[in-house]
Length: 260
Image 1 (cartoon, one colour):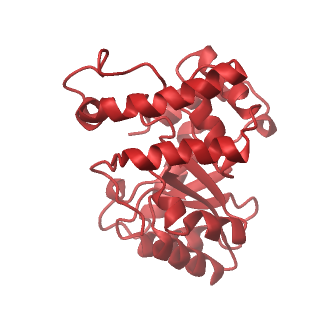
Image 2 (cartoon, rainbow, N blue to C red):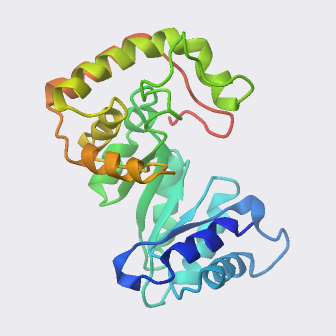
């Protein structure tokens, strides 16, 4: 634990602090089970690993005993200067509302929600979470908008994901359906002269969310910038969603739940 912080610290070490935003998370399962200061211990350990005095966004990572940890987060940040944007991840609407009320009782507010959201998993929209976030000035961060590469055009029935991986188990059985959606994505990719993978990202932005994009190469960053510059029309958004809905693909993974 802590490897990500150490790697990132090396990357940003020579940069001006105000030139970047740093996000980190509290994972309940990693906290000391009986420690009275489990929350503060984890936050301060993470800050120390990175050589920082503050985070810009801080998350409760999942709903395991979340009300308890949200209260601990509220107590820790209450009255402090430079309070980060406080967020929760993988929460349903009721859990999000509960977290917001806990934070409000300490003079704070929920500022961010992070959930799985893509063309083939819109349960955060159907459940009212996106509307609640818009109404309460909460940033919705969408992760897995590319469904781990399934919506990139890279994989199809002739070129499945590598066998033996968790994502192969999830997506390879439905690649015939995913091919249909990728064909629709390609039409728009050709229109906007971008790669297929940039269209699901542009769709997520058009829906008012902030996509979380995993990058391992410089080109991935450049591609994300291109996606941010695409403005899909309402008709294009609707056609993509219509196609996705007719396919009825369920990609809810073992670590998450359908939002209701």
